[in-house]
Every structure is written in structure tokens, then in C-alpha cells.
Amino acid sequence: MVGCLYGAKTTPQMYVIDAQGKLVYFGAIDDKPSTKLETVAKAKNYVSQVLDQLFSGKTVKPFMTTSYGC
Image: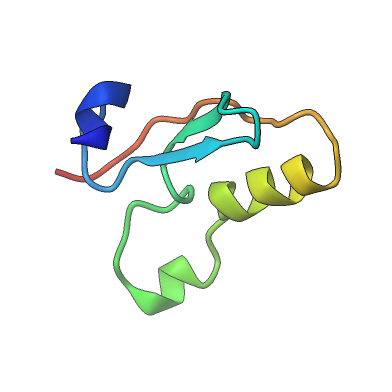
């Protein structure tokens, strides 16, 4: 239901919302559309990066990435 409110198109599609309720990121979890452990281990985790930026008071980059999934 909440995914529909934000216009989610794939699963998974990640959303990060700040303390004021502002959407600060949406898109993929990471940069590797794979389920292989060896590939995922080398992935750039967008969500972790965004949360680190958010909690340290920095500008969130990237704001949006292309999600993958079904």
C-alpha cells in the first residue's frame, strides 16, 4: 500500500525518508542487479551510502537511481 503511494514500480525499490518526512532517496539497493554472493559483496550499497550522508548532515547523493527487479 505505501509503495503505491510513492509510485513503486519494481520489487525491491528502496525509499529513504528523513526525519521531516521528506523523500531523500529512491531507487535500487545497490549497483549490482544480482543475487550471487560474490557479486553482491562487491556492490556499491546506495542505501547505506545515503543513510551515512543523511546522518552526517551531508547532501544526499545520489537522490535517485534506477531500480531493478520484478
